[in-house]
Length: 139
Image (cartoon, rainbow, N blue to C red; front, side, top):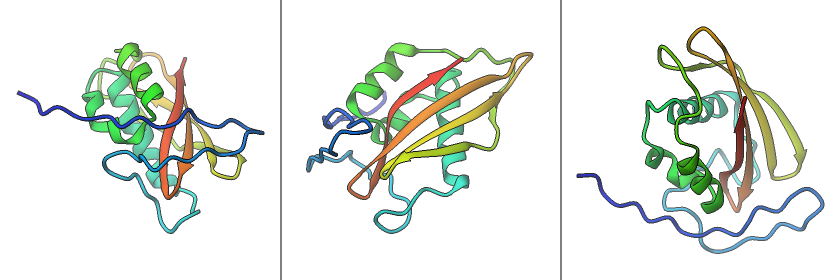
């Protein structure tokens, strides 16, 4: 029997050119990297990408990452199901990071785990001192 996880609604992510919209409702466990305004370091970004790749490969429950996603992105994660087919556990490479604007990070990771490598793209945005995933895509 697994415990129920409450997902607090977060506002839709602001996109480049929009003013940031903050709400007092942050996720249950903050996903904080360093002092306010600090960018996540490469190691932590890679660990987050690794965990996301494991969820998309069906080797980790999505609930493990629920507090690190906006409500919309988490629902997409649940609907996506198994998107990465691997013969062995996935292993992500070094993230390639871009900062399109202050408070937003876009990263791309190569996911290894079988005959074919995959690419995982992730957008993280800062909500107060917490970083949350607002979008992801794999090919």
